[in-house]
Image (cartoon, rainbow, N blue to C red):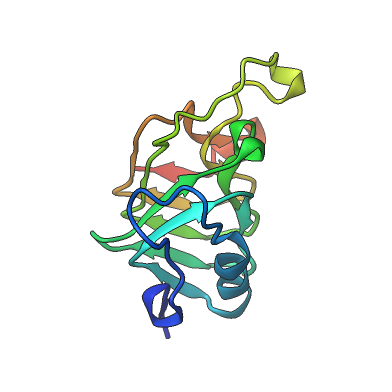
Length: 148
């Protein structure tokens, strides 16, 4: 059964709130539910990672994820660590224009939205604004991912 972020009051206080960190609460939800609906604006100060094979992260028109904090200058927000995961209709923005000018082996050029680290994942109907990278995948996984 899907569980929404609004049902657990996981959200920022205002649309211009770039201080509230929702990472731990959203990660805890991902540890419990195989189908998560993001229907609120969420700030992430660290990466979130899938917890189950076949996990679904679905976003409604009112949902959005945003990076905040220094760490997110060099990290992608969502890591798909399990096979057959789906991300549907995700909207991500980067209103603070976080990025790093470091060389790539020091973390530069790694800011973004989705890091695919498992096979047969589906990314569909997503919009990623002002991200250095929208979606990345390691070469062995890239051939098994579907991005639409």
